[in-house]
Length: 291
Image 1 (tube, helix red, strand yellow):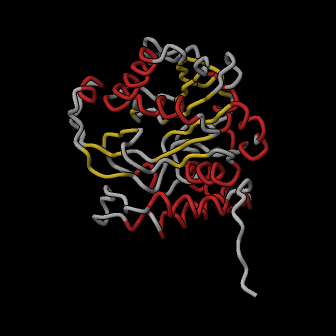
Image 2 (cartoon, rainbow, N blue to C red):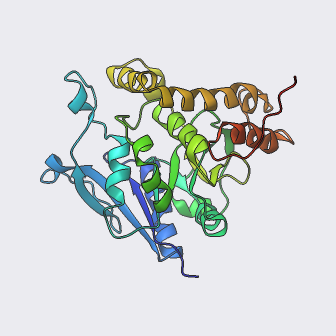
């Protein structure tokens, strides 16, 4: 069987160490798996002024919407998540599209998992690590120092073409990347509508992230308020978020030690799968009623 064509997309902003190393990880994937393409999506109206391209990564000036589309007082020009995903399927004929936040390191085991399991959709948390890396080679040389698993958010998403096309109406949204709610909602949409979905919370982790401040997701701002309004105004988005929040509060938060959340419970994956399967529209699990 031929390997699937895989497109990895991101949206970079300037250049800095965390992002540079993350892009190195994507280039390593492309070198290891020649059927991978990498696209850096940027805004159409910035093509003439953009100066921060990465060698080996194709920059596509194709984004039309942003936070400025929805609010005049936006402090940052942030892309719309679904626009990136929808447009990614227009370049070539990818079997899979992977979105990843620009400062998150993707590991080869993610691609290996896709090749082995052929999921319809997949996401997972990242492992926060110490900010001691100087290049992706340090990851390959096993110099990673774990801190904690970020159990409450998701930094990469995998969409299979057939599943994406079947569920477009549920996946279109006005969520902005870089602010809360969009990631948890899309993870929940995978749980609800995925035929062969994977919420990969287990070890070994599939993504790494050098720890830094979390002000971008905790501080109040109009962009955060926008995402919250998109979330709460759509009943399906609200349900998707509630599913993931319940799993966080009643399952993942039982990890020890508290606040570090490194070690999963022995039966955590079974508990999570049982709960998620009940929430899935394709599940054949029968709920037994007591008369």
